[in-house]
Amino acid sequence: MEKLYNEFGQWLRMQFPYKVQKISINAGFTCPNRDGTRGWGGCTYCNNQTFNPDYCRTEKSVTQQLEEGRLFFARKYPDMKYLAYFQAYTNTYGDTHRLIALYEEALAAPDVVGLVIGTRPDCMPDELLDYLEELNRRTFLLVEYGIESINDNTLRRINRGHTFADTIEAVERTAARGIHVGGHVILGLPGEGKGELMCQAEELSALPLTTLKLHQLQLIRGTRMAHEYEECPNDFHLYDVDEYIDLVIDYVEHLRPTLVLERFVSQSPKSLLIAPDWGLKNHEFTARLRHRMEERGSWQGKKSIS
Image (cartoon, rainbow, N blue to C red; front, side, top):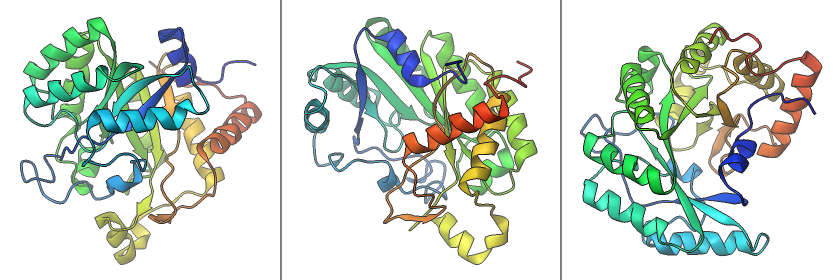
């Protein structure tokens, strides 16, 4: 089959001679826009319960979370190796010595062959980056930054507490150390239509990102954004699934072909999700996306200027 986009699983197979799986970890971090350093309340869309599997509990050690995750997957894939995924909140925010100890604890766990560290663009001190540069020489490392938008007005509206200039600086500083850099963006934030998102795809393509995750805007119970939607629903455009698939295809056509695409959608627990509820698992969405790309004669980078 002709390659439609640069798929993350295929890229991982080029990095490892065996099958690998990410195991999420909640190491008990917070964020600078939650503790008052940059702001209070966190991002308006965020409820971290949507990210964490049942075994991710802060009362459990990193080692225990990894072991429970490993046992979950090992029943079906006994030869699997694992990437420890520091996912919840900001995983480079805190005392550097404590951060290093947690990373090293994860790497010491059985069958863990690398780290994925999720963080914010304004939380990468040089001291920690020095360590990560050394770490990258001895194991697999991917640092993922929550970008969410390139529009500073949008970033203020969703209470991110950083600017797109912060993103550019963090991505460039990290990539300059030889580290794989990932980015996350949310498609459908208030005030961002198709034109803005196509420009976003081009601008992100110009950055030294290795991987990119796309997420549809979801309204999650208990968030400030859910309350904003109740107050002013006309400020929001919640895509139906076919409309969102065409938006993603348009977006992917504007991305440079070398950018590795890890995912196109998020899947939140039904108990927390307000809308949109498409009733599709991630693999089902991806199958529909691929079919639609074939129908349209589409491929990643078809309209890219990068």
